[in-house]
Length: 105
Image 1 (cartoon, rainbow, N blue to C red):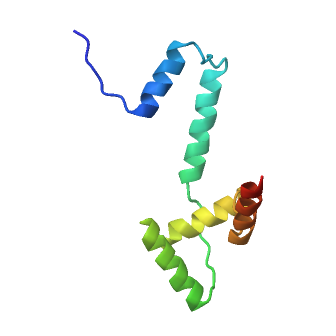
Image 2 (cartoon, helix red, strand yellow; image 1 turned 45 degrees about the vertical axis):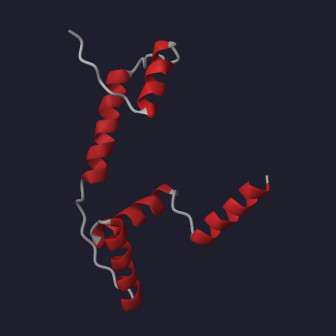
């Protein structure tokens, strides 16, 4: 007897896509799994401690933002630094500018 699973919309779309043969097998699957597992370990690993000085206003602001996101403020600061290092952190003014340009197209 087969179990019936209730799929949400996204899961149904993925299943249809898979059944149509739109997915291909990854040749270096084991290598990719090992590489991404290492990325995950490195991301979680926190092996350096630092001290920073900031204004009281910024400290209170970062705590408020972290509370709104539901995470510790140190985690938020680490995330911001990580995004900056990766080059994925952009100023709010730049994002607003890009949205305006996108809306014009």
